[in-house]
Image (cartoon, rainbow, N blue to C red):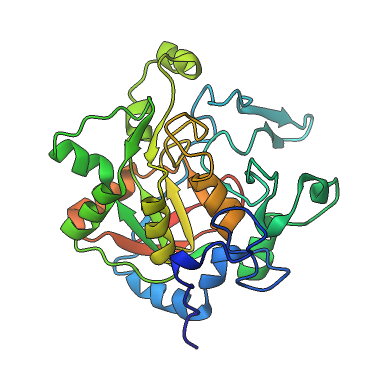
Length: 317
C-alpha cells in the first residue's frame, strides 16, 4: 500500500475554524497518532534494511541528567529498598518525565491563544482517568516509535564552519544550515523518517563541573539553542513528512519558545504537537551515535524504540 502523502503546506490549517497550522482531521475525526500514522508496516520493513552491522547504541541520557533540571522541574530521586531479612532489593524512583530524555506527548503543549491541544482537545478532556491523547496510544496502536532514523549533526558542521553558538543560551539553528548538513552528508529523507538533530547540548553539559551543573538552571543569560521557529522551518518539517523529531537540546526549538524573537503564532511546539500530532523528543544522547555515523560515513539507522517518556531509545546500525 502506498503511503498517504500530506497535503501542501499552503493548505494548512486543515480545520479552518481552528488555530494556525493545524492538520486536524487529516487522519480521521478521532485520531490520536498524528504523524505516527506514517509509520506503516511497509516503512518498518524498509527501515530494517538499515541494519548492516547490528551495532546497538543507546540514545537515552541517564535519568539523573541534567542533575538540576531546567524549567523548575523536580530532580530525579532513586532509592534502593532492601527487603530484609530476605536477600532481595527493590528500586523506587521519583521523576518528572520531562526532566531527562523524553518524548513530548500531545497533552504536553497546546496552542496558547486558544488553549487547544491536538485535534482541538482542551484541558478539561484530560481529567483523572481520561485516556484522551495519552502516550499509551502510541504503544497500543503502533507498538512504539519504530522506523528509519536520520541524524543531522549540526554541532560538528557548525564547528567546521566556525559557527560558535552556545547550547546554553538562546540561539537559532537555521533550517538552511540543516539543509546544508544533509546535502554535505548525502542524506535524503523518506516519508515516515524519525529525525534527530545534534546541537551539542549533552556534549557541553557533560563537561560542566558539579558546581556549574547546580547553577545551570539560574544561568544568565538563559535560554537554549534550538531550531529557529519560522514558517520556513515548519514548511521543511512538514514537507519532509517526518513521523517524529528529536534533539539533544532540552527545548528542540530555540528557547524559551515564548521569547520575543518568536511570532506567538509560529511555534514549533504548538504546530508540531498540537497542530500535527508530531512527537517531539528532547535531551536524547546523540554523542556515541554521532561518532559511529561519522566513522562510517552513513547517517541513517534503525530505531526499534519503546514508548514512554523517558524515551527508551536505541539506534541500530
